[in-house]
Image (cartoon, rainbow, N blue to C red; front, side, top):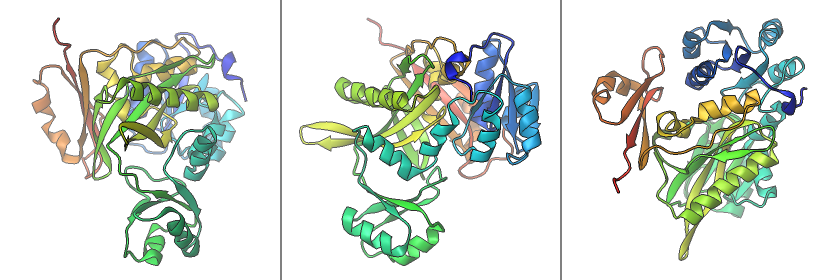
Length: 368
């Protein structure tokens, strides 16, 4: 395992990206602008990231020979999704630097381990309990109360792998429907709004946070992000401080997202951490056109051993709207909207719930 501080890429060097989705695509495009090459490793032959790189490896993550050849061709390795198989990360880490450090995945791939980690830092989260059976689920409900959210400890995104439990629900049926032996029960939070902070950290310890973003979900899928979030400055500073504290405690190198809830708290408000995403994040897409440096470029800078940029937001408000499923078919209507930029991911046929692209809109600052 190579010390991240020893990584110092130069233009012309190659970054290996695990995962070929839209995040990998946008990472590769950001790297290209900085004169860095990328090679993508993905088992999906239709990966949209393949379209923007010269070299790609289409193989399963369990294919050790393919992983070794991939590692031989690159100078540093990163990933666009957090569920990288631990065995694959171990094979790669023995041959090339893997950033962020693969050991961070042990914390962020497990919701219980993640909650324990955040709690040990003295940062607030929803009340939670480990659940391994119907009996322990009943005990957890007595402790936490209802309504509550039952989530699988591993995997699951965009609302998958979780269920809300309310008074009168069949507890045994809910447990069976989740089809898991390890879960976490979390108290249901009556939040005012959902926010996230995109933070970047370099190997030298430099931390830069983007503006706090407000997020709106539809059918458990992010639909709209707005920056800056309409919250008091003191609360925004607390949210950025929390994200920086988490990144530093993980000795993180790269970009991560910290999702939080804003709660009404008497005469003021407070924030609770919901989840950590150890990668570039959908709620940071507004930075592509709405900031002086994007989350993707920040990630590339960090893993390349380059100084991070100081993010400066363009305009008064920046909005990101996801184009989900058939919405991509109406992309033309966005092309004539002032201040709007259309990003189409190059995926195949649209499916319900599938993120096909997004639009950023920059509202100019009010004239003085």
